[in-house]
Every structure is written in C-alpha cells, then in structure tokens.
Image 1 (tube, rainbow, N blue to C red):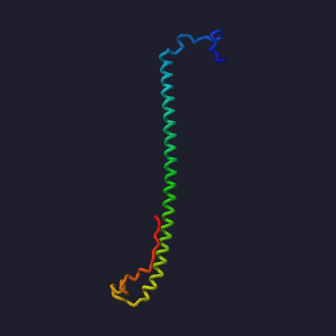
Image 2 (image 1 turned 90 degrees about the horizontal axis):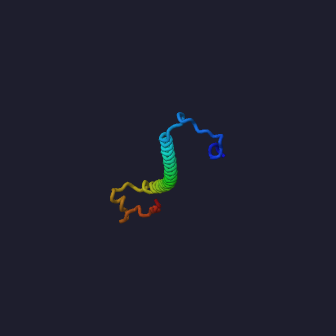
Image 3 (image 1 turned 90 degrees about the vertical axis):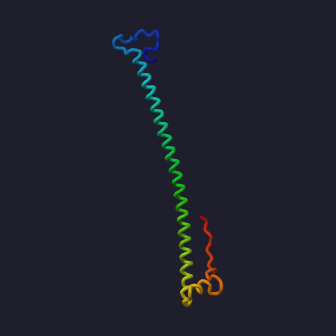
Length: 123
C-alpha cells in the first residue's frame, strides 16, 4: 500500500507547514493539469480526424485516377480506330478523279461517306 494511505501508519510525517504549498496552489495545479489533459485530448482527436479525412481523400483520388486512366485508354483506342478508318478511306478518296465540291459530297445523289460506320463508344 502507498505510504500515507493507512491512517494507522505512524511512520508517515506530513511536511512542515512552511514547505507545503497552499491549497489554492494545489487547486491551481489540478485545474492546470485538467485543462492540459483536455487540450491534449482535443489535439489527438483533431489529429485523428485529419488523418481519417486525408485517408478518405486519398481513396477518392485513387478512384478518380483509375476512372480517368480508363477513359484515357478508351479514348486512345477510339483515336486509333478512327485514324485507321481515315487512313483506309483516304486511299479510296484520293483515287477518285478531282471533282467539284458538290460532286465530291454527292457523287451519286447521296452523301458518299455513308458506308463508314463508327461505333458508339461509352464515355
């Protein structure tokens, strides 16, 4: 048992009246320690909340990054496809004799590029 906690223990001696701080000093120390404890607790709570917030933001940015990378991949594939379609169609267009703009657009009474079909990509 701690010294001084047993009322029958005669070996415990209280400090002399001149060396003991007043009870108001003790109360101030207790209040200061309590305020410090509460402030430290609030600080730890804010740190935890900030860490949680940063973690959620990081997860959201990673998801957004993955979605954007997927979109870039799809757009790159679409650009490759359209480039290859344009290349294959250019050979057909360049082999035609020079025509006036209206003949080029409507050589047989309809728009001559109707045979090109472009797939609809999901964005």
